[in-house]
Each structure stands twice: as C-alpha cells, then as structure tokens.
Image: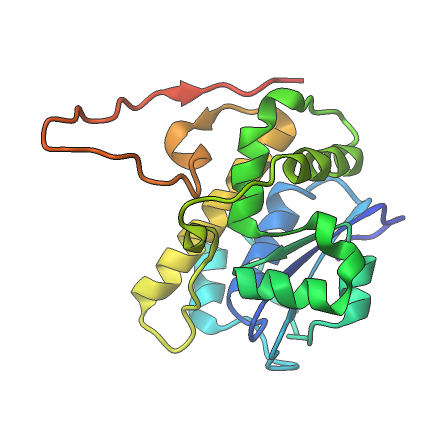
Length: 224
C-alpha cells in the first residue's frame, strides 16, 4: 500500500492469497506504482489462508527479481475490496468471476491479469502515456475494456496455481505473472516491447512442417 491520497487502486485475486496474487501485487507495486503515491495495490483470496505470509518459494522468486516480499498477511476477498478497486485482476477466469459476483458493478474493470495484458497490447496504438500514472492506468482500463472479445482458447488467460507443487510450477507461474506485469508496464510508460513479451496470451498460429520459423522482431510503443 502506498502513502498519500489514493486515486487509483489495483486489486489482484487468487485462491489462497499466498502465491499468485501477492506476487502480482508486489510486482505491480514495483513496476506500475513506483514513484506514484496516488496508486494503491492490494490483493485478496477467494479461500484465503488468512494471516499467512507469501509462500516461501514465491517469496524467493520475488526477492530474486528485486521485489519486496515481506510484511504481507493474506486476506479474504470481500465485496468491499472489489467495490473500492479501479482495476481488478484475477489470476484465472474463476477468480475474475468470483470478484464480479461480489460486486457486479466492477464487471467493466475486472479482467484476468493475462487477459488485461493481452488487451492492453492490442489497444496500445490508442493509448498515449502521461506523467500522471493514475490517470494513465485509468485510460488503459478503458482501452482494455473496449478490446474485449472471445478467444479460441480462454485457458490462455489463466495462470495455474503452483501451491503444493514443485519449484518448476512456481517458476512458471511467476514467469507468466512477471511477463504480464512487465508488458502492461511498458505500454504504460511508452517503452519498447519484445514481441515475445507482448504476446502474453497469444493463441498459437497454424503451422506445418514447411512453415518458416517466426522472425523475432521488436515492437516499439510510444514514448513520452
């Protein structure tokens, strides 16, 4: 949570609120809200392990990335949390649905994290960053909402729960979270995107044995 007068609140949601949503919360704090005291980032769980810290494997991954993992207590997702948020980011479609069920008025600004990153990239040409980070985030939410459309494989918008699994599962979840957060952050600041980073939930294109290997290129976003 940031100090000062809060003008924009981001809420991340998972199940236990000890792995995925706190990782997203801390990365968003670092990448979207750094130097912006008007932005608050919180998280909650649909079946939260209330009072628990961030799970140790995820905490290590956060620290290795340069994000802070301390001073965290898991909390239950409530209608008040959803109602007070300007952007709600579930880790899966079930978490998105759970948030909307608690506060239906939040539907227009509730997404999964990967869905939000995908839609932000899709609408990047209609977005111009500004020095006011809270206002920029508000515009990004509008851009993403205007780009909503069904995709062939909706599971691409989900981030699997690593809890109770091996380190590989935590690394995969963390990689998907950090890629999505970084992608949005780059659009938010007008920084260049690698194509591999911008396609956070891109559906695979048909290919055959004679299909050429995709060319790696850079996509350049607008600068301030």
